[in-house]
Image (cartoon, rainbow, N blue to C red; front, side):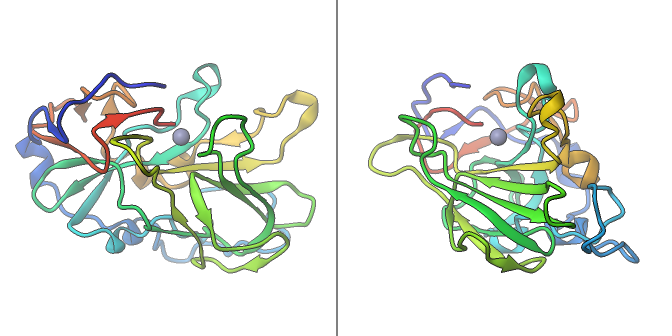
Length: 244
Ligand SMILES: [Zn+2]
C-alpha cells in the first residue's frame, strides 16, 4: 500500500492515557512461556504451545516499551498473510512507526535456511527475504523474514534465537519504505490448494502481538484499542512508500 505524503517526521497527536498506564511488556517476555514444546524434527505445524522466540527483541530498541500491531494479518482477500513488526510504543508514550535500521532479526526456532533471496521482484529492491524450514525436512513448515539484510546462507542450520539478519533501510532520499520486518509463518505450501492455503496468522502463534492493535491497520491515522493516539512519530523517512 502507498501512503500519502508526510511533510514532517512528527505528526498527529499523542497516545491515550489508557495506553500509557498499561504495564510494560517486553517483546522477549511475550514469548518466554514456560513448559512449551521445543520445535523438533517431528513438529509439523505451528501451534501457540511451541517454544519460540519472537524474531525482534525489543530490548534492542532504545526506549522500547510495547509492540503495536499496526500492520498485521489481513487475511487472504486483503493479501497480507503476515505480521509486520513495524510499530511500537516508546518510553515516552509515543507511537513510533518504523524500527531502527540494523535491528537484529532472530530465528524463531531451530531450523535450516532453505532460501535467501534478494530483489526477486522486478523493480523492487526491497524484496529481500530469508526462508527457514523447521521440523521435518520437506515438511514445508516455514518461517519467513522479509526486508532484511541476510547474515546467513542457503542450507545453513540455525538455532532458536540466532541472529539471521538485520533490518533493511532504504537510503539516499527522504522517501522510503517503513523500516520493518514482514514476518510469515507457513504450514506447508500445499500447492494443490494454492500457495496461500496454509499461511498462519503470527498473531495466533504469538498472541501478545495483538495486545495493542491499531485500527484501521496500516494507515497513518488510526486508533489503538479504540483510543486515539496523542502523538505518532515516523522514523527514518519523511515520505513513506509501501509499508507491507
Ligand atoms: Zn508486511
